Length: 357
Ligand code: MG
Image (cartoon, rainbow, N blue to C red; front, top):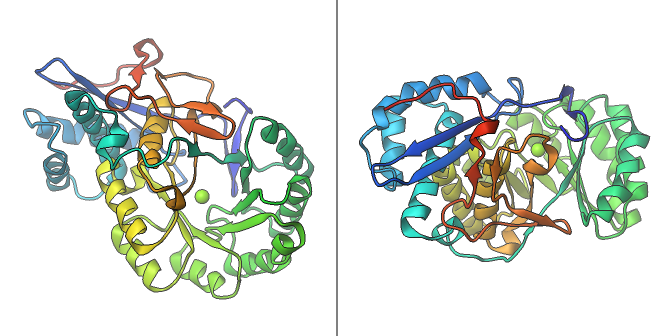
């Protein structure tokens, strides 16, 4: 990690284990995908699980046409129940192949380039309140105006964290207080109550993200606050999304590609959110250049009013795993116009763990 560590809720990591999938075809085209869980204790996903699941699935996919995405997803769902994150890197590599076969960048195949630049947020990793606040001018100098402030640890300290960061922010900027499931319900209510007037006092655009672990705890907190509310970790399926929309449980969601099982299913959820009138943070759990390219293509092809913010994860990493990543400029990113994802893996940076033929 460029900043040494990445800390959210009660967790902290200095590095993440990512898995890259390369799919070679008899036409000589290679597709590339990536899945990087945020360590083993964030979501029900872990790096060794990605590789074990791919070993399970890969022999069943040999001989199938990778450009028939719904067919490929059907085969994967028949051969392995659940485990969407395992399927994500394979699905992503098949989309890359489809783009290369069609000589089109993925944003066109995903719906067209609906926005030239993708708005990014910058994570303010959890630390002492003063240290977090100090980051804001530095990130603003890089062009960021939207900040995801990591809280979800001790609620009293979290209230100080949010207020200290807010002091450094300017009217119109976004302060997204993301607890990543870390608070108990009563703690989330305390924090929401303590920051409820901050937006009115400062002109900062406050949002409150996934305060508690379960959907029902989040819903209870939502029903007692006027803060714009984001659901992230508990939106793990179309069913969960529809239930939450029915319950008026959020104003926005975090759409993470690997949590839905890849670009095929994430696009389905994205299109449903647009139809429901629900804006999104288009992103993934974590990743390098390849995941970031997938995020950028999905975000480019999302109507601007519905793509609130995204993340350029490769900007946080010290190891480069591919060339051709989205370019980051002034708090935005732009995907490559090359066919597919537009990235080329750096094979020397990768360790070969399994091969199927
Ligand atoms: Mg989040």
